Image 1 (cartoon, rainbow over the protein chains, first blue to last red):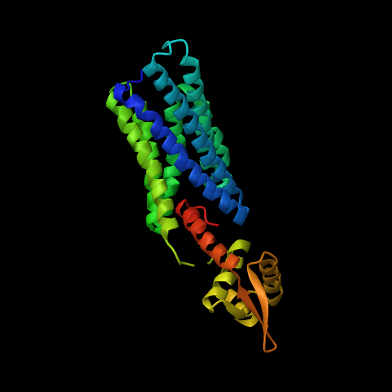
Image 2: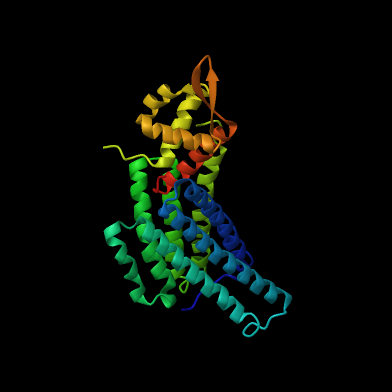
Length: 211
Length: 92
């Protein structure tokens, strides 16, 4: 599939991935802390899920940054030196993301329906990575929305919007062969998604003296 | 119907109760406030003392339970974590 990317965006893209990974690691840290309190499996899976997603974005960010710097310095031959390194980053990201979304679905799916998690893999994901991701994240968005309807808190709304933004990221990525702006919009959605999560953690952390 | 409280939630409820009472509370106050049987309360109080969240203080022949600095920090930390997990719809 042809992916159209604006040239100026090459320098920004790695930083979006790295920032997303930092926020993801922060969320995973909080879920690890909650696991130490509660010893609940779901909290451990949540920690693994965000750690995996963050690792994927970190690897992707580093490989994309290396690729960009190599091109800028003229040290890389576009089709030889860094192609395999960049591919490695992308594949690592694909694997980590799918693992992460699958874990999220595992957490949110009711006990009797956990077998449904194996159904999406019939699509043989990788060429259709974003479709598969969208399929998995859609269920997470649905559960986050249901949670917001029940709790009606700003925090749960931020989480719902964050997952929704990540869902939009995968949707727009699927249309990157039509316009290079789709790629930019997709990445802005990704950034908005992770900033939403960071904003929620910031809101919770700044409240002092409440017991 | 209310959901059953987790063990951690009960421990935090006891700590919050003692904190609300001004930092010290009698075991009878905790017993009614935390809605626990005497046997279970003893188990939880022992666990809290063992972890350094509460300490036993004797005053005029009465035993009181006093919340420690570590106990207060635990409640604050727990509240943060609870808000985050609730936002994701996976309560502690």
